[in-house]
Image 1 (cartoon, rainbow, N blue to C red):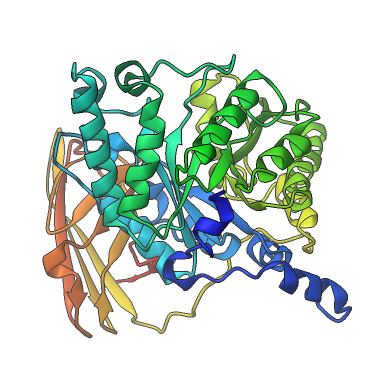
Image 2 (image 1 turned 180 degrees about the horizontal axis):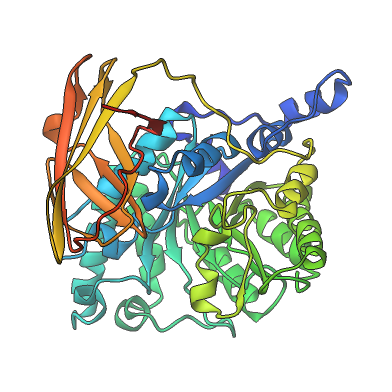
Length: 467
């Protein structure tokens, strides 16, 4: 059987070492040990990881990135590693967003969960509507996996190789891969991922397989078949997009049956939604149920971690997909910890009352000084130049700020991305290194001429003084 034997140890990007069960046991036996104050510390003491999906557009927000840094030992690419993001046109790969996440994880001793290599959704039209025959599409799929998994080989701890392959009745979803190639596409994808990055653990991931039902039965039969064929599969990702008061009663035993195959099981996308607006009573029940689900992982031999899908309710996908529902995350719209945060922390054996980002290293006065200058403005646009002077040399930079009005339409001397009002600008290959006392600079154009106050500029998560 492959499973846990095939790869002797979880590969942690940037050398993040999560303590094992022996460490957790030793902690439990030492009465002088103080309880952990963050999710990350508490999960470490239990011998599992705790993760979050990261919104690339918010990494320039120091409060958001501080929570991601302090509270989580694993980060998942929410969107920036999906097919439409990394290969929007055939043979043209763009890795800037994924590189940002890998860099962030390596700076903070975290593992990276790659999401996702093969999925029926968020596919560019050239794949979904390309009219390729089975041989052509299989080669396109293999080439995509080879390039993407190969790009971050050694930096990714786990890959969601195939995502959401099943219908609710346990039959295979009629994706372009299933209808064109057939069921064999799944084995082919795992083999290609293993060849591209032998160190990463390889997972199949799906929703509504939390309890014992037709869909989880279909998944169970598939992974049994893959194992019997010698296909390199290491884990089953159980998404766990759950509804308040509807946690499946068979969740723990269902997770255990997958673990009994010798596979890791991981809760990969946990959130618990409710009708909105929320109230104190339902938030309290939500806290209990978050803790319950985490407890299932701790009780199952072979459950290696829990990832929540997003940090705050402001970043959640749920209101857009389920109108009138939401409030599904551990932090609220303003990045304040909710009762659910303490529910998870308590389930992990930690001390309730945290959830605020730590200050990080105290910056020295004058660490960076920023100039944000609107060079020109007209009715339907503006040109902005940004310059940051650093006190100490930097090797790679990300500048963040809010853009209260309009959208970035073009940029120069930086890779600029925008999510809502949050803008992040990342160095290009030729200007990554900035010497002590020197400046980095870039510019961009917007589609709005509205006047606004000069925003706070951050450099690699640290606020800069105005020049």
